[in-house]
Amino acid sequence: MSSEYKEPGPVLDKENPFESMMRRFDVAAEILQLEPGVYQYLKTPVKQVTVSIPIQMDNGQVEIFEGHRVIHNDILGPSKGGIRYAPDVDINEVKALAAWMTWKCSLLSVPFGGAKGGVKCDPTKLTQVELEKITRRYTANMMDVFGDDKDIPAPDMNTNEQTMAWIMDTYSMHMRRTIGGVVTGKPLLIGGSLGRREATGRGVMIVTLGAMEKIGLKPKDTAIVVQGFGNVGSVSAQLLREQGCKIIGISDVTGGYYNKRGVDVDKAIEYVKQNKTLTGFTGAEKVTQSEFLELDCDVLVPAAKEDQITPKNANKITAKIIAEGANGPTTANADPILNERGIIVIPDILANAGGVTVSYFEWVQNRVGYYWSIDRVNRRLERMMKAAFDGVYATSKKHTVSLRIGAYINSIDRVAKTLKIRGIYA
Image 1 (tube, rainbow, N blue to C red):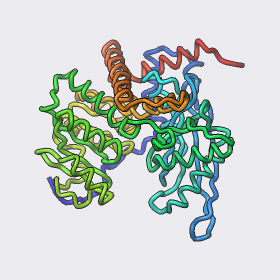
Image 2: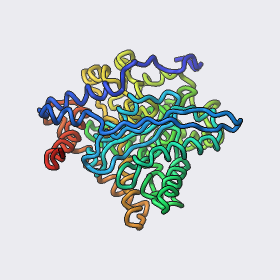
Image 3: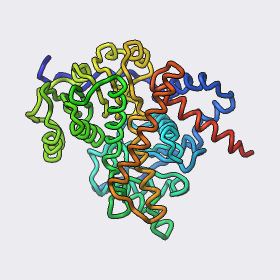
Image 4: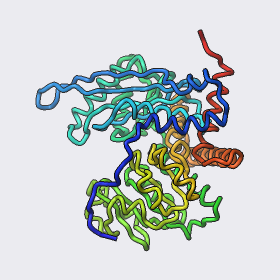
């Protein structure tokens, strides 16, 4: 194993993310024997909005950015989903992420539909003032879309509490009254929920422990590799270590960091706070991103980006369990390889659903004006995540399918039944 960083990461499949999602959807739809009309309804986004965002940059020049918001489905309630800022944002990615949100909310019995948004920009090349201008203009352009009882954004890649505060303020200024529930993931000071920042990582921890129990893995005997050391990855690593697991690998954009005796996660988190990345972290050996995913471990938590586990590396994964902290880290073409090898994959729509669940809690607290303790938030999150995991596991056994297909079966079935009860307005 080389300690020198040689390459930026594994060669990715060039799969259309929406088509990749639909391949899993189709398998579940066939098992459920969905009627053709219901099938078409559930696969088709309710609304797709693309806007231009003209901004006067700090240097005085005007630049035009492109923003998207896709409402995939709102049959269960107001649509819900994050907004990401990235240079590679495109409508197909946003459509796929919006659909995933529909299934995620349904799976957790959260009364939201699915949505997603994005602005095509490079936040690393923008000042704070420019980011605020982009956010506020994007919000103004989406005034007919957003609403605390219509469509509720949240943080995602390269957006955060401050971004949500700008959205809430812009929306509230247009409405001439403060409307906290129009976004979740806000700062605590303006109506955010305790436990929201850690919620996705905590959810990953809960379902990972559930899967470990199913195959008789005890935390003290479990070696875990976590790809990605942002909010989800770092919190997942920290909480799993607190449960007694050994975190032997962590990574970020600069490469992988491996220590078979165990990485000091708290030290790594503090290092990143001070240095922005893991570059120069001395508590582990440097490895390439490709080598990192293939490290000898019991559990792999891909918590970085889409399409990291592909047919090119699926045969080299050593983990017994993969807990998908990121959205779409495993391509559809890699699924059969992992299934044949008996690797348990806790799918993204289940594994990382802790975030939207506590976002729901935040929305509820905003609506009633009463805020919960951190213990209450965490207890309710654990109860909902465990119930969803147990339901998916039971369905996968009933139909002899993977946990991913079991999750799609449960979530699609709930949306389809709700559609039939509500009917089609014409």
